[in-house]
Length: 252
Image 1 (cartoon, rainbow, N blue to C red):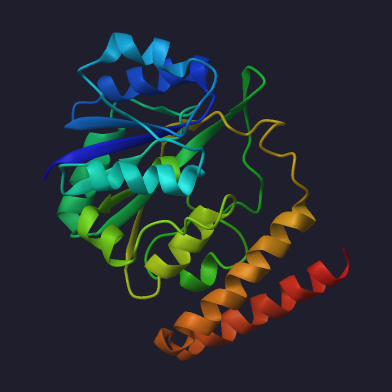
Image 2 (image 1 turned 90 degrees about the horizontal axis):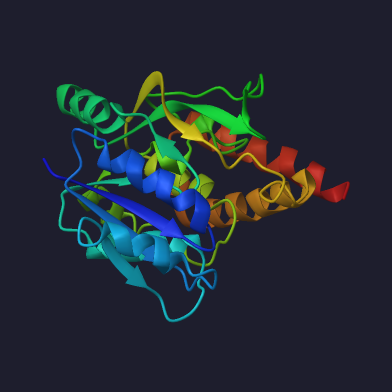
C-alpha cells in the first residue's frame, strides 16, 4: 500500500508550514501533493524550502477546494489518498495507525476523531457531534460528521464516485460522504489523530440557516440521482431529513 497526502491551499501561508511538517513527521506517507488554488499571498515562498520533498501544483484560476483536492488525487501515484486542510495538523501516528486499521479490517475508506483548536486553546466539540463507523448513511444526513483531514480512502474508490463535486464550495465533504456511504462500510477510529484548527470566525461567517439551505439542495439532488440505490430504511431517513431541512429553510 502507498499513500499520497493531498493539501489544498488558498491564502493560508502561515498555517501551511505546520501542516506540511506534520505530514513529514509521519512514519507512513509516500508523497505530499500541494495544490495551490491560485493564492495571492506568496504562499509559494514558504513552500520552496520543502521542494522536492513535496510536489507542488498551482492552478491558473481559483476554482475552490473541491477542484483542488480532485486535481491532487489525479496527480497522485499512490493507491491510497489522505487529505489535510492547510490549517490542520496530523498527529505523528495518524497515517500509520489508520493504514494498519484499514488493512486489518479491509476497509476502503475510514476516518478518525479529531481535536478542535481555536484562538490558542483546545475547545470541546459540540455535544451533538457524534461520529460513526459502519453503515453510516442515515447517521450523517443531518450534518457533516466526517472531517476531510481525517479521511483515508482507496484512490480507486474515490475515482469510482467521481471525487468531490466541483460545483460546491461549501458542504462538499458532506455531499461526498453521502455518496460514499450508499454501499461502503466506513471505518472509524475513535482516537483523536488530527488537530482541526479551522474552527475559526472566518470559516463560521456563513449562517447556520444558509448552510442548512445548501444541505437541503444537496439532499434533493442526491435523492434525484441515487434514491433507487438506497435501502428501504435509508429512503425513509432521507425523506425525513429533507422534510426537516425544508422546514428550516422556510423559516429563513
